[in-house]
Length: 93
Image 1 (cartoon, rainbow, N blue to C red):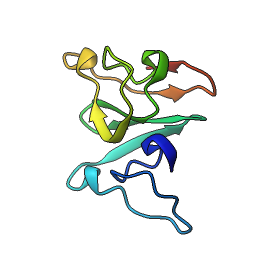
Image 2 (tube, rainbow, N blue to C red):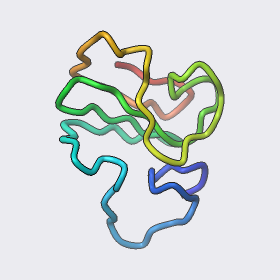
Image 3 (cartoon, one colour):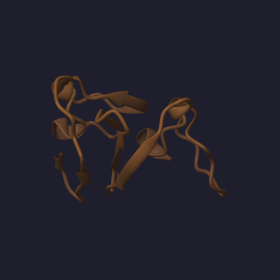
Image 4 (cartoon, rainbow, N blue to C red):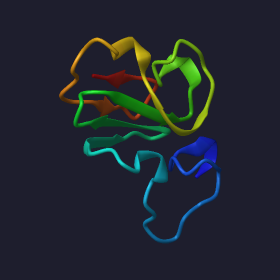
């Protein structure tokens, strides 16, 4: 989808479910899909984000779109147990 919303490394729409290859070898335990971005947590407590980066919603300290899931380094020393991607320009972890 546009701005990398689907996490496949491109902006193509998908008509059928497709595995997000960026998580190969990782155990994703939770996902939250917002209107323009998505968040995931992995079994090790890491937070990943992708999609439209406007207003800093992805948590990477910039406003860059991410076409692939990218680890949110701000949580590197913490174990996050839940995430929520809002419909506007916000995210919670």
